[in-house]
Amino acid sequence: MKTLVMERMPELFWQKIKEMSWESYFLEDTKSDLDKTEIIIIRTKTNFNKGYFRRFPDLKMIIRAGSGFDNIDIPEAEKRNIVVCNTPEANAFSAYEHTLSFIFALIKQHQKCKEMVLKEDWRKDFPANWEISDLKVLIVGVGRVGSRVAGALQFLGAEVKGIDPYLSVSEWKERGVEKISYKEGIEWCNLVTFHCPLTKETQHYFSDPILKELHNPVWLINTARGRIIDESVIESGLLSGKILGFASDVFSQEPWKAQNFAKKDNVLLSPHTGSFTKNAKTRMSLETLSVWSEFVFNKLIISRIDSRFFL
Image (cartoon, rainbow, N blue to C red; front, top):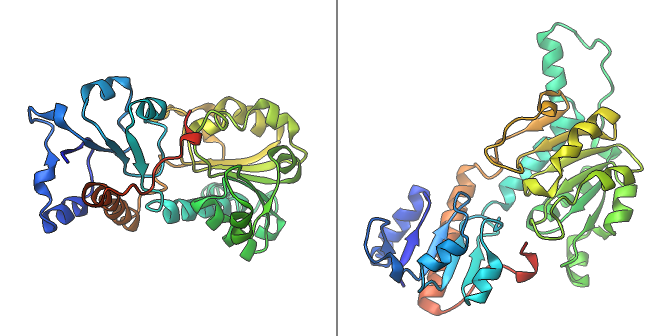
């Protein structure tokens, strides 16, 4: 099956293709027979909309090299009977670690501490740090990333509860996380961390009405997708003290134009680098080729996107 790779992939990806003598399956974007493309591989930059579907009339599969899929028109793919898959394991471990690093940096006030040292304000009026055992954590999305975050925080002494409408009773038991509704969780927690896909239900899942529902001030973490949080409420939440601190690796628009709250010492930001590790790139390359080869040679579909998730 003719395959077009529309975005840059790690060198290992191409090395494996050469090792397996699969070069003949892959097209270059300059070739004239693009309309014969049957499989397309993309990452984050391509917004695969209806225009792309019209451009590739023979398309049978889209592989999203990575975990997110909000840049693909899933309903249009379903209408055209085109399979959409991702590589859900590739970035899970690195995103989990990135989340933990945010949590520690927030509750131990790393940024404020550095500024105090630089200003020679040695512990002057320094508010007490939190410990992990002080945390009551609401995990929104108890999947590959969220379950790892939950396990680590529980091991370190935090109370953890989760929300995930797609888990079965046995899956909840396997993860060892207590299930709770979003409303009850928001009233109970003092830290919220998002690990769910961007869907019609989760867009602006944390918004002004939710801010008003909080019973306790919260630490707020987002390493999932930017539009899950309504960014317009962050500044007011920080000013009112309802948000103790905010950390995000993802934004409503990327690249992101910094807002006023970005300069606060209880706000930590990174430019969507949660998956930027050598191991994650290796896993992404191998997992993408695994999805591709199973479909091409064995007619098997693995890691198919669940249509319940689409926006």
